[in-house]
Image 1: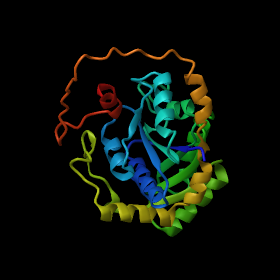
Image 2 (image 1 turned 120 degrees about the vertical axis):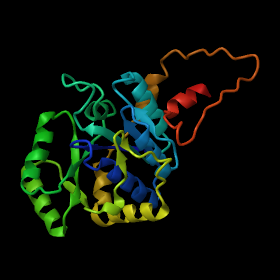
Image 3 (image 1 turned 45 degrees about the horizontal axis):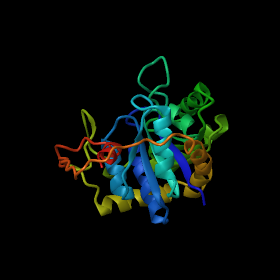
Image 4 (image 1 turned 60 degrees about the vertical axis):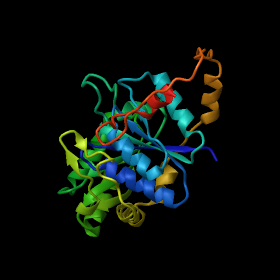
Length: 276
């Protein structure tokens, strides 16, 4: 079976996309699926949590620092032997390096890799207004394929039914599920974002609780149906036409030291691959 892909995006920073992304990864791994995690943007913190859950290095996709061709190369190469690629977005879906273009945004990456978007909405304190929010995201850029909605910080089952009904009456995307308000599944934050995975190891109890909440409240079968197939073979045909890069070999071995601990953890895995 060819691999599939989904992008998990938020309406804004702090909507809960990292928690939901980790929960989906954990729940899908429970079902025996192999997952290739990705993170949009120059972020080294979230990929650390991805790797902790998926047991494979998470890769960065970035329309601000990296070319489109490099992003596609990384995406297709790393996804080729997995069941599904899950891409966590950055900030809000349409937020990027500047206000005048989509450069560096999650929406830009989703278009480049031809992936559907699951939009995470913080529903705390909302009722009918949630439909206006989702409708605005759908209409803002119709080239961005919003394929489903996951609601976060929902107050109760009754609250969820209200939200789901009004969204599906006014919007195209189906509501796939929700996570309740629960401080026990929140990841600690600080002024630079989340606390790093080296400082806050996710224990087995936390992962079990998060994946169980996802399995109870999110329709994973519908989620997987909304994912799109990655056309690995078509991309491989295109890339084989390029002239290979020649690398001059050293006469002797070269030893490179990389400091890795709680202080020195700001690394992107592609850079380490290049050093190798």
